[in-house]
Image (cartoon, rainbow, N blue to C red):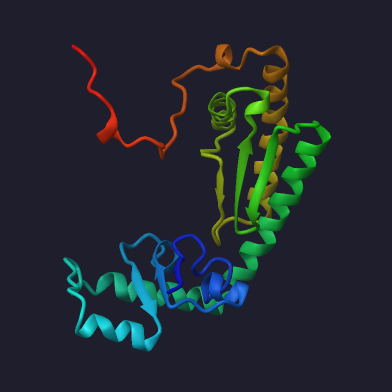
Length: 215
């Protein structure tokens, strides 16, 4: 059975999500996030024969199953996405950001900085060959905040982002990435940090396997 997690791709790369974009039909698909524009909602969708199993062989229960406000919001949101060219807009501004940022990285010869992903959602990452990736990420976040940009490495674009916002973001990157280059070359990234080092959200070792610290 093929299951697609469409939390990030649903209603962003195509109205039908990654399945429509890639031309692949999944047996089950999970949607949320963009379908509600901030309202708490998620959906399990799939082939008719697979979904029919929920009626007889699966215990299925929801706490907020009868809540209709999010359903109404989701319908309105999906209709807006469909009728206002939102997906096309995300692709356009995403391409503008990707091309501009790659150009900045190339001009600065930052071979330890890479941009991956699709235009609607890209990720800026740092190679350990040049130093601690978390230190580099923390420094970039710190300096982008000085320009009014709250950043975590991922570019989550929305309909409100236009060409002007992308231009401003690129100007901020053009000011910040040279600072990163200087810090890497001077090997003093940690000394430039004003706050705590960022920590990974997902860890390889579960906290259940760690021993408690002695008091």
